[in-house]
Image (cartoon, rainbow, N blue to C red; front, side, top):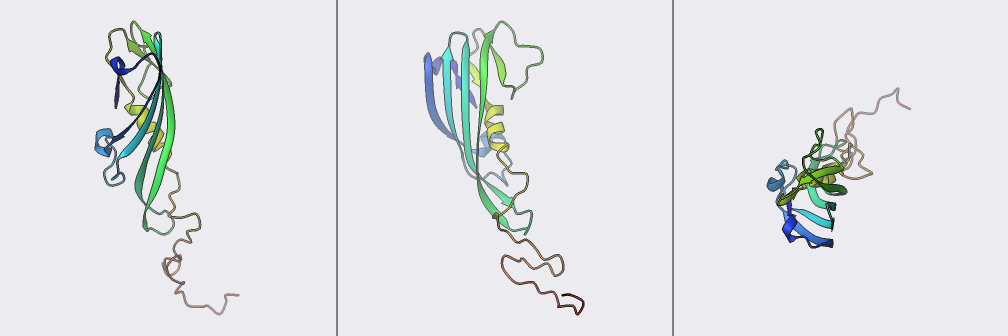
Length: 156
């Protein structure tokens, strides 16, 4: 995703875009809905501060019960672009501070959009906070049916 520098006025700029997941090279089996991106760019002499908010819906498999579910995702990220004669030697997309060169037409914020969205995916994916999971004995999905394990005499 690129921001055209010529389209920015000095000072505060804000807009919203909706892009397809394939434009961001997101996994098509997980991301089937468009990504809504709110952008704020504050353009000053030799500097552009960009704040990004990315939102979408992901398709996942629950880590406890194995059922498919959808989850709304969203996060924020920011980057400051500083005008320089040449980029810094260790500079990478996704850094908090990046360079743009004199005469450069666009700022690429794709890495920041991806960071905002992908870092909002929880490490443990649950269909609901109270998911009961699968019975380790009979494999029943305890959200949908009771356990089918036979009662043992030794169980109290």
